[in-house]
Image 1 (cartoon, each protein chain N blue to C red):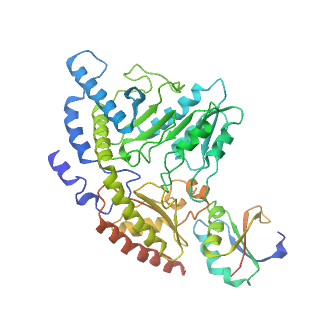
Image 2: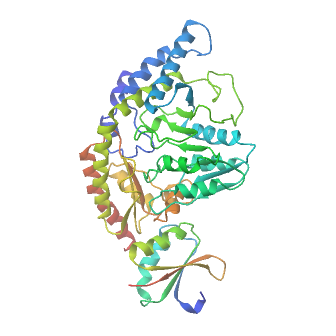
Image 3: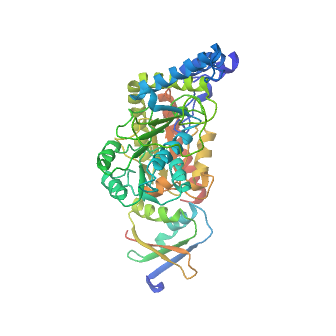
Length: 387
Length: 80
């Protein structure tokens, strides 16, 4: 255990060149420390009455209070789930179930995470997609217009886009929905830990491994007074909104990581935003390359661009050979042959796509190295096809 | 748009992205400025990528119709 934690510590050589924090942020040192301690104290069933159980319950309640404090919500609005995806499913479908008397249709922006899209497609009833502009932003008026159609149960708009970083006008969407009776679900998985949680949601979801906590911990937020009904089979656990045996050590580690990143957010965010500005400028200078997403009102750590005539898979592999790990929304890099529905909805090039996302400790030297490699890798691939 | 209005039709059926756009980029110079070039592509990415190529390369995207066999066909007017 000691040697393993020594070799894989964030900031150590193992994560150098890793520019895919939006897929998963390396475990924050605060989370690692807490996780190791909690593994020895949080093993028991928090629902039992004995001393070990009370210890586990105390740790779980502590984790809930810390997360609530970091997000500016009440502790009884916080539920730990088995993943961010699970939190999205429960949040969206639970609000939908709470509106069963009014309808079963789900309205969502065209650039929601696939977890929202899959949940909406799984539920019986219509699925209405609201288009976005070239930057990937949804119009609050368009959401409200779609939501006022008969039979709409719930509307879903993300806090910020996970592929291009554009921040959505959640507060304005909530204001536009006020009076319609349609509740708002906000997928905040890409934004929590990076930006303050927006206001106006009835339920929201977050994912610990996106902010430096362990994988396997999601956070479901249900606003006090919101009409939420469990859309899945129930259980007899600590929290009626979720099922399964609570992963107490992981929940506590997730809370510790969130506390650390929220405390560091201003400084880290400013540094990341400056590095992203540099990447945006350098990528835009590569011939026939378009940087997409809002240049200003965006997540601080993430930037996406597409290079004409370039195979996305070849680009990811070429950068990987140079020591840089990035994601791509191009079809040839996905598990399906469909390109990213986010890029398609924005009307931007879906091939030759790269998403760069910085970890909390990505250095200027790593960014400089990446920017030196990028034009060469792109030029090599284009030379192979004669363009 | 009738077949007579298309100066050159590229058969990119069965090709995966980015090949249809690579063919478009290579062969756009074969039509005169003002003429229309058509890309027949079965890969769904072409529906987004051909209009995006037009925007990035300063060409005019005319729209989508279907080839004689029903495959999607994307029309581009060379404007420079």
